[in-house]
Image (tube, rainbow, N blue to C red; front, side, top):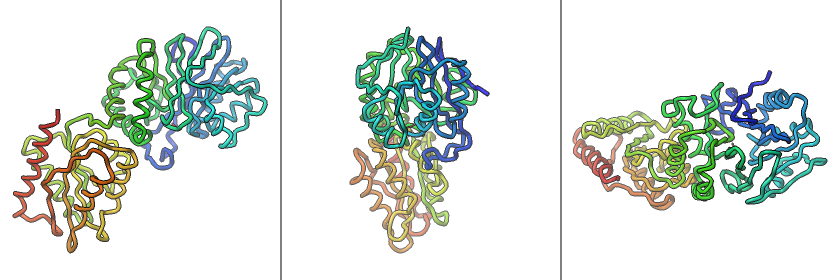
Length: 406
Ligand code: FEO
């Protein structure tokens, strides 16, 4: 049975939702699912823009078959070769032998590397600025290297103002019937998962997102729809979306806010983190969140770290090092190129307290443009009543630093 949505005249969403995959890229939890978006243009020629993950192949094929109603598929535009979008392309080619393929040079290389056979199909290698006409619709191809793979491109339909944006502007969360951003309560239900998707999947490549945004800027007055490969289609509020991307891709915090992340074995470091949160609230700092790194998947920690301006790392010492899950969180910050944050440190150790110095060294030496507050809270097994002044000093330093943020 088909399940399609019309995007605009002659253009349909023919993708599928996935609630059965638990880990996106076999690493990031997706408790609310994900969509794989493909789009079908019916012009004098019928054109499919991207395919879907293998798990969604059957639904996409039924959608295409329904809309084509016996007509042939003339062309397949492959904007991104990652298998969550390209895994089904072989099935499309098998069913539509007259289908020619548009893709970048690196895209064709990856296509063959993944084992897809294009024999018998016309292949058209496109590069920046090339165009293709399918009847009334003419599209232009724009390279989008490293957003999120080196072969990626975006395609702009100059006739109806549709930007097929590949991974850019995508999101976790299955569509479940809705398609457009204006059909959901985005600020309530979607923004956190959009941020988690972008920062964890493409966060490392902020400068490349910036490059794409600059290339897209002259097109903005003509863009009517942004059609990503995951999540909602945008047909309004582009400024809101672009503002978020500007923050995420330049590593600027979205909010003056404090995130307290603790790594605690027996609850003592946790107690200090909670005491700090309470002290901050007494000082009027209430835009705070507290996370236990041991029971929060690191993708959520990363997403929140991109959102806030201030992060408190509270870690027990473990094997004379940083507690492993806290270390993993720090390593992910490095891998995803996080910059421009202010940190405070709480350390704990029962006989050799090392975690504070080690975390500080990591922040100073492995990450870029980080500020570390001088006030550090140092615990020997547990925080004592006589350390309340130290706790207050740390909370006041965080409050004062927050007030300095413009
Ligand atoms: Fe959704 Fe980079 O693939």
